[in-house]
Image (cartoon, rainbow, N blue to C red; front, side, top):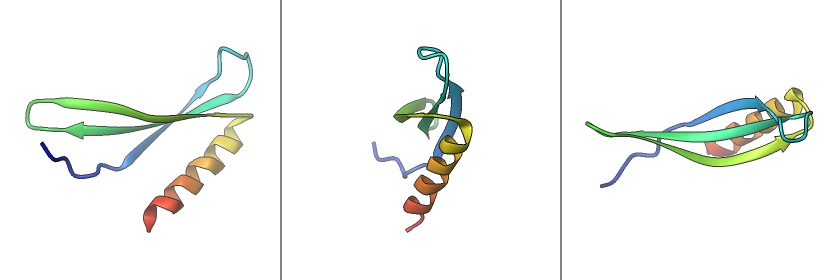
Length: 65
């Protein structure tokens, strides 16, 4: 089964393992008529939320072309 490439979805969650910083989680959702598949593409540990948002903007800009 061939899926079209869905857009990336971004989440910023706290890094509980270290007690500081955040993790930028990138996922894609593939939806078929009767199934829903959520695939985690990658996780990026970041020092703070501003760094995570900057990284997110860079990824979005790189995927536009």
